[in-house]
Image (cartoon, rainbow, N blue to C red; front, side, top):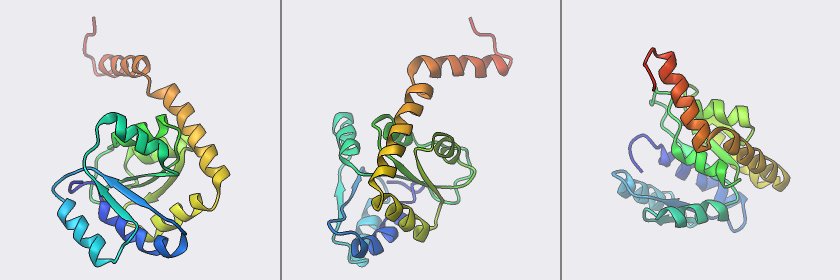
Length: 179
């Protein structure tokens, strides 16, 4: 939970969700420099449904994703690189729909749109983030369909052999000799 993650947008989106969704629970797992600020913001917003967990071992993190109805990926609007947060690939691999709130320049947007594995909203637009979560909440068939599409995309594009082949292609395209 650092400067680039935009977790405050998640907390701002959670306030109306607590009123709209019965038994709404938001779990934020991790650590980082922004954690004290985020806990204070959660308190200041009067959020009752937000639970902060420490950084989880990989096995527990995967279990958390699998137990979720939908998973969130956020980045701040000022991040101007074509970043793809690693958690997007994990979310897709476990077959859960993703709601991504990233800059439009992020490759996460392209991957999500290409795979149809979730909903993208522009970074910093917490009202849009709220609406996207509500859309998924209200349609279990949509959640299931997006989760399946994400899993298929992950199998096709994120496997170790596929990634190694792609890396070699990039190196060859850059004029680097690969033996």
